Amino acid sequence: MSKLTLEHKTDMLVGLFVLGLIASNVLGSKITTLLGVSVSVGIFMYPLTFLVTDVIAEVYGKKRSYNLILTGFITLIILLALTYLSISLPASSRYAANESYLTVFRGSIRIIIASLVAFLLSQFHDVWSFHFWKTKTKGKWLWLRNNLSTFTSQLIDTVIFVFLAFYKVAPQFDFAFMWHLIIPYFLFKIAFALIDTPFVYWGVSWLKKSQHD
Image (cartoon, rainbow, N blue to C red; front, side, top):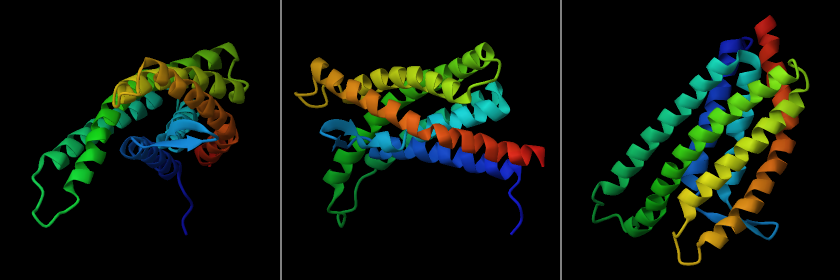
């Protein structure tokens, strides 16, 4: 088997980024309970996007990271268009699950729109913040830069996303309940950010190894 080149590894990371983005949007309309707290199931997939963004930012710099974000944004727009097309097409008389299909994917449209706004603002902030701290630390302390940029970006993402995606989707989803979602959701994201720190180091090392070959 041939050795993976830097280009191949980067393509794999971009694929992982897009996977996390699409999966969190398509599947994220479901609310589950984690340690007794209500959270979107997207919490298990979306942190991948911040992990990959920080790895790309560390190895390639700000411009390549912004290109990655724009790729994700365009992907979400296409996903939104395809989802709308899918639910707009008439169902065959033999297809008995159309109402369930519409219920699920109509919810996904709102999730995708919310994600578009939250994603763009939080990811651009993440890259800006990452490089701000990189300058301040003179390129040292990757763990600190990764977590500081991710913490603030995840807060921005969580507040915007939860309100746009879930506010008033049901009578109980009022303003107060939004904060019941936001606070634990954000804390779980912080936990995931801390957990993924070793993977950021590994990803950077993995890319740089090919960069120097």
